[in-house]
Amino acid sequence: MFPAAPVHAAAGRRALLAALLVALVPLAGAEQASAGARNAILVKDAATVQVLRRLLDGARERLGEPACQGVLDDFADGAGKPLRESLASQGVDLAGYLGWLVFADGTQRQLCRKPDVVAVATPGSRVVWICPGRLVAKAREAPLLLEAVVIHEMLHTLGLGENPPDSHEITRRVRRRCQ
Image (cartoon, rainbow, N blue to C red):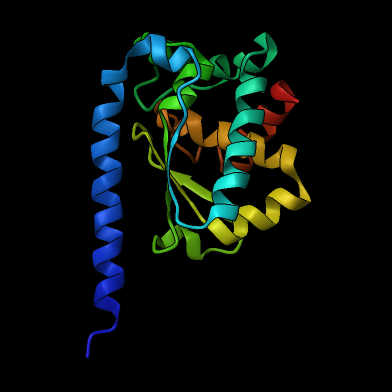
């Protein structure tokens, strides 16, 4: 009678699992994150996981370059604190911080219903919600752009809001510095 109930229950379980993983990630320590900790990816589709891992590897490689790390100086969090300071307070380098992020299936999230959205992150949360089908399709078309989108979403997890700057401007700046 209520066919949507299992979907909502499953989405709730995924969100709870994502929250638990985020709570546990700092326990791993900065050393492990810097040494190449692998992201938690809460997506069932193996092809999506494979594509996301490739994008994360590419983003991590780019973040190892000083020019790309400059994106931390381009943006500030909602309180006006530069993102470089937000990262420093985590006690980990930028590539290591990327390894702390959790990527979860955002199919049921409202923003994934918009045709141009491939990923969403709330400022300050380490969960990045991906729109699997769209992410995979766009990654085939423009993998370098999607690596920039991964970095863009990482900036949100460090506290960057939007509007201003708008989403396209954030990605433009990331691409300019990181490609």
